[in-house]
Figure (tube, rainbow, N blue to C red):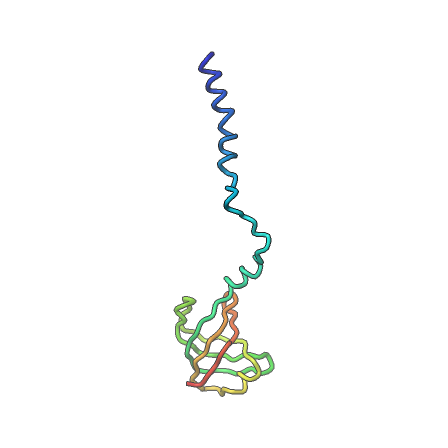
Length: 120
């Protein structure tokens, strides 16, 4: 009987000890309400990279320059041909066949926007 009471008393104290351990220390505030989590996710999703390539197509109506570029190691992309969203100024400064060096912002997947573009 004494063993049973002792066991039950121990089991009754375990949840209280566990709950106390799970509370944060008063010296370590954990208030994240002022953090802009949606902006953080956006920044993590977008990444700037650079590459070199050859202009294959210019589409001023849609605002794209298609570039055959080499591998982009920072994004683990192989060499490929892909369209990049471009400004009106960027569209006007290159011609098909131009060798270019460029920087771009990769938002998600294969969506990219040129941030700088220059002829090599």
